[in-house]
Amino acid sequence: MTIFKFSLFDLDHKDNRRVSKILLRIFGRSTRVLLQFLFLFHLSYQFKNILEVSRKKLPFGIAQIGKAFRNEINPRNFTFRSREFEQMEVEFFVRPEEGKKWLDQWLADRLAWYQSIGIPRNKITILDVPEKDRAFYSQGTYDLLYAFPFGTEELEGIAYRTDYDLKQHQEASGKPLEYFDEETREKFIPHVVEPSAGVDRTTLALLCEAYDEEEVTDEKGAKETRVVLRFHPRMAPVKAGIFPLLKNKPELVEKARAVTQQLRQHFSVFYDESGAIGRRYRRQDEVGTPFGITIDFETLEGAKDGPLAGQKDTVTLRHRDSMKQERISIADLLPRLHSALA
Image (cartoon, rainbow, N blue to C red; front, side):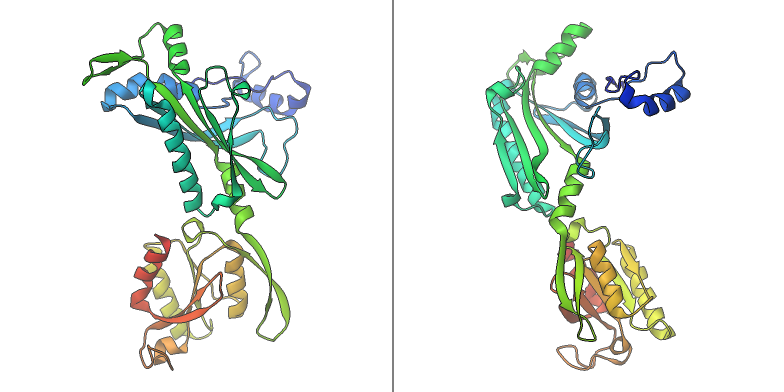
């Protein structure tokens, strides 16, 4: 794939001397180093290749995720504003008369996506960018703003860029980038709707949304602060923690490791046998693990009470947010977790 890269760092600029020295050492003084600041141009450039190879019909899109760079004078607010970051963009090609319809459709889809990963709708503000603030070729732009602790800032932009980008490539290359509609026998340059979002900003929004502190009572009756990341279960890096009640009881450890092995084939899980069970719960709360699974003596000898009284091979399932615990059969663990993480 041909990649166009555009200069963001002026290698002679006094603020970038350290960067310049590293790059010049690698590439040599005769080489001009260019760092890409977005993917739009080479995504548009590949339109014809992908159209011919995949034989797609409109509407269709090309998506890419990767590193991008900005010549930020004042990086700040943790990972929100930085010189190097991860960007994800889609170039969605549509018929000219359907551009505004797809702009609104992408807005609805992106809002639904943010909600699905745990960012509530009431934390996102939609800014319909006025014409005077848009690029001259744009026929509509929405900015999605999130209420960060340091202020309401942009999370994503969705722009209706019309046929401007493809026309520019067509004129510069001298090669046609038109689309032929076999049904209507029309030939035209498609219009582009472009959602563009930063992975780093989305991750930061998830962390801000999930982080919580609450006062709880420990096993000895003392008050303490519980730090918890309330990630949506799908977004949690670890889905379940597995704990033998006591690490000096080989039968508990063996059963806990067997459960770990069973679940690890399906989810990211964490085995922990070190420290008091309450401490182990707290450690998993801090990384956002939605479920804690404890193997205790009732697992081996049979549940003492409840619907599973007398039944062996049961575990204690602890819920991160409520800290409530329930008795569940090991055989039911997998379908239960699959359902919660769907």
